[in-house]
Length: 94
Image (cartoon, rainbow, N blue to C red; front, side):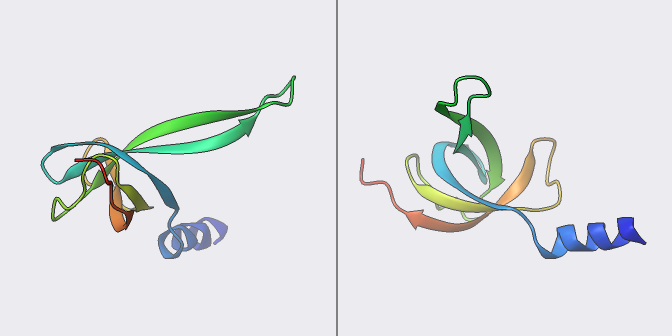
């Protein structure tokens, strides 16, 4: 019972992250760099750590430099388990 309720909860409340598009060269796929701050275990200094994830962009609307929000979904391919939710800020560079 506990496993079933945990699985249902994962489907009703997927993870949402915000990051910057670093690549849009693939068809219907973007690469998003998500940064987080982690405290060093010994020295206590906060460091920036980044993760690159592939997200599904159905309409190919994103460009490099855009700030986007992506949401977790079922696996679409070997590396794509995220889908584009919204474009928060467009890049000003051309």
